[in-house]
Image (cartoon, rainbow, N blue to C red; front, top):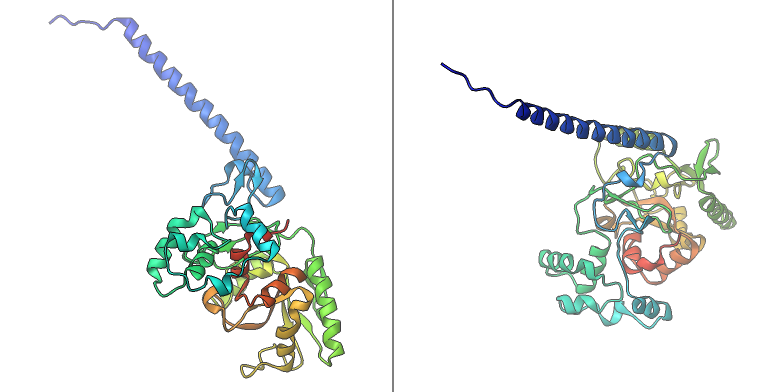
Length: 335
């Protein structure tokens, strides 16, 4: 039988196509290698991945036009900011009982248009909740499941770290200094230390003595504590979800031990701290009243530095938590 040969040109054409495909593959792998090497180098030096390899979890959380964005609590209208700063809006008394619906949501100065659908869905899940509460809880991402791993911008004050918001992997405060802690060597941010020293002197003037038993914790220490207590959420925070890792949180010790009265009524020192911490820029972060918001048990010994102005605002406006403050006043985040 006579065999028909294929024209040699066709084989040459296929060979060329294979060579072109191989070239593209080699070029792609070359680029991938450069990105990988650069990312490793940056991470080893800074503890953070470069921005061009960051993967956003929610819109507007990472960067915008190469600038870090305060995690959405989103965009607020200029009118809303001006109304709040002028003190002309009192949502607590005038709007708290408005019926649900988009029009009801939008009357609040902290309404965020991008969250409209989330407001509606959260209201449907919680029909007894007021429109005002729906708006601020969604703004604080309390409608999301815990450990949604939202990267936060840590160059702001106040710095919100909780079961939803976590710190970037490798995070360490820029400056840490020793804080008074008896015989222990503990660290905290300079502003936290300065505020605590003034608070401690004032307590001594009232016959009370305060010492710090826990301050800054690196992620490795937090992971050890989380494992040791059985990895039960709400008792000890997971690493990168702990305020102690910010260097702005302190656990206090008074005469007789921690400030909870040994499981009974609050100790005199614990009462004094709760009634006076805001005068020095601190808040008692985890109270009996806000456990359903913060996700943590009551810890009367745990105080968090947020600045004098913000602590006063939280107390004077009877806000339940730092989550509520950040959700109602997103423009207050200070670099």
